[in-house]
Length: 418
Image (cartoon, rainbow, N blue to C red; front, side, top):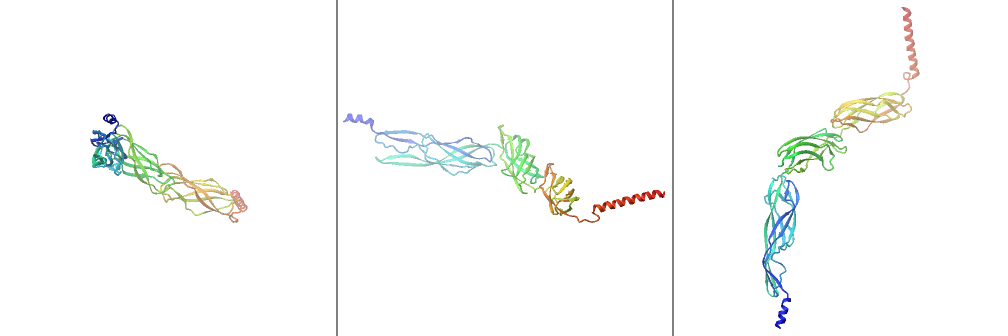
């Protein structure tokens, strides 16, 4: 029996119990720990457990506990900003149990303050967990004694110097719907980085009708606190309305590390004036079938900007013909009028009624761009002139012959008298 017991002992089930051990947690940042002022990003954190079990007891009568004392259970992490210029936008997170030698990940959304000073800061990571302090063996029963613990782990982050653009003053010139104008700005570097080879630029903001046509201005070295004046050329879509629209302003430069970067865009609002427009303000003209006449048309600048070297033109179609279909109007300020005169032939076979002759105005805007107005209608009423002796061609020829004959008679008579 003793021999059998000795032979059977090595094959008996062995229980394991760890007498001493506890979790040992640390935290590191996953990825970069450098952030620019105003940045909104995700901060990845790795929580590692390097805790060890230092004493182990093995025996056939020992019941193995479900948990080991170096396992951190029910781990919850909370990122705080303390005095750092960071705003944490993520609530406390439950990660998972972290066994000894294991790790878990957490991600937090953070926002760096726009006014953050460059430097090194510490973000406290508060970790709360539970661990097995000991297990009491009562034969067939194990009693677990757990302890809850909270500790704060430091995370080191850096705020890098950058360039931030503030628009101190803005002024536009000749910025009207459907035209092109200038935008003048005074920019200030309110950041902490000295920009090299700086280039100010304006870009379209979303679906804004403001579209830069010359959107870059070279600055050069742009020191913190320095101001510069820049000028851009911007066009306005024909579909725009007279109101303010957004435009984005940024600066591309070489930073303190020699890397080419672009500052965060600043959105400004630019007022846009009304569209340049014209209208015919003269009443309908009356012309007569079968005659050549002078058609007088009064045009008015009903838009919001002055036009230069304006020329009116009509498109004569049947029953009208014209060899003089263009008239010079000159410069017209908003609200001003000018009269154009066109020589028009009217076909005698036409119909006596009111017609609409197409007309348009070619002009130059304040930036000397050539533009053409929308088409307008010139109203003309055609009538049949009633015949009279003074309009009858036969009568006019007879009168002319009498005048010529009388003149000849007088000339001969006076010659004889001499």
